[in-house]
Length: 116
Image (tube, rainbow, N blue to C red; front, side):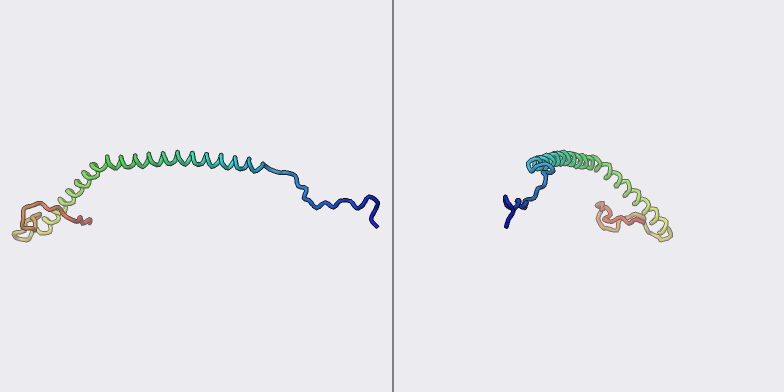
């Protein structure tokens, strides 16, 4: 027979202490971190846009300088090619170094530059 007063109660529930912050605190923390991240992303996008604009304007301002440098290089190469042609063809009678092979008098720049 059972003891007087009955059997003692069986503990079937988990008895764990509450640890860490609650769900609302975690949600608030994640929202704050995401907000700060989006703020920094916006600042980075502004800086990237400014650097892109600065790069475009620097290229725009450098174009005349680069074109002039290219023209000087082409002229120097043409003069060197003319000097080589004069040296190579000096023994050929009737050869005019640098004379155009075309039959019209319009100036035609070279389409390709041979770099030796």
